Length: 445
Image 1 (tube, rainbow, N blue to C red):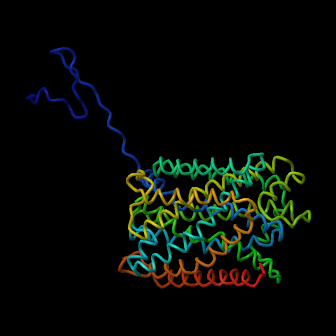
Image 2 (image 1 turned 180 degrees about the horizontal axis):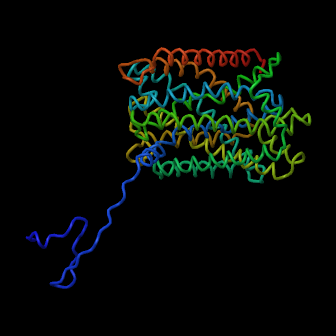
Image 3 (image 1 turned 180 degrees about the vertical axis):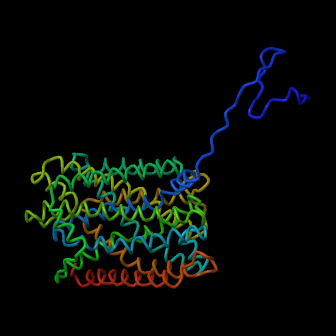
């Protein structure tokens, strides 16, 4: 034992040197970390689900819709993006709150609260709608790489293999970093495209805050399309499942709301860049008959320069790749939650075979389908939007019923104000979806 005289002073440790001699070595204690830094670091750790969902909302179908809106109606539809910002934030926030409060995904909660039949009903509808969206992502990849001379079969096979390997062999953190990196690339690409287009920013800002209304059916169908591609069923299911996969708890709700706010802002800012770029070039020069984002990219070249075509095409490629990663993930979450199977990116294939099997099937089937000779890809992309429009009201009704149930939500359940806002958003979005479906049925679209 060490006697009191030999005991080292506080903050001093002894180190042996040779068999007998010892010397005292001063040890510096780490300085206390300020509390605000700890809170900031904790908030950063929460970020991810909302931002990834925000980036992924601008997928191939979204970019095509925004390109057509800018080319056909100029700056007139920018106000729709601002209006949809509120609705998108609320629906995504409710989805994140459901995941945090219950630790379950959407179809899992539907199964627990309403039974297996309703869960299977919601899951089947969502899987069908998601399949159309995944086919749209492959179409976007083929269109983008086609601008650089890459054949569609080569582009499709490479994209399918890359996405399945990334998700099945990665961890939650690695996959999230990849999604965010691609999302940043999309944002930079379309911000650059808007800058190169040299738009009338004064007119754009005025159209953003003051609705420029028209009476034509085509205009209102475009309004429905912009809202429908911004608020999607797969996006609603994805953010809830992703929050659960990240194991966020009630203490992280505040930071997750910030995450959702950033994600929804990103969605609409990038969409505005696309609308502005096409309005300042295609619409301003009377080129209003384009049918997809690839044609928009090609048409930008003679007007602005080949750099604009390159940037717009790369943005379409990045957005399609991101959608190809996120939408099949949403399908895998949806199916496994509905039937209580193991799921999650941090699991390996042998630990969650159904999860990865569904993901691989969705990607593989879509890759083969898009290679059918003579397939009208524009029609497929449009029908995917219609399917999403049919499904969205059902999903939002389930979400609102679950969010008000204190038996499963506890203190995080919707109160009167949040409930009223939620039902108003649900009714408005459902009404727009009905308009789109009715117009399609009667041939107005």
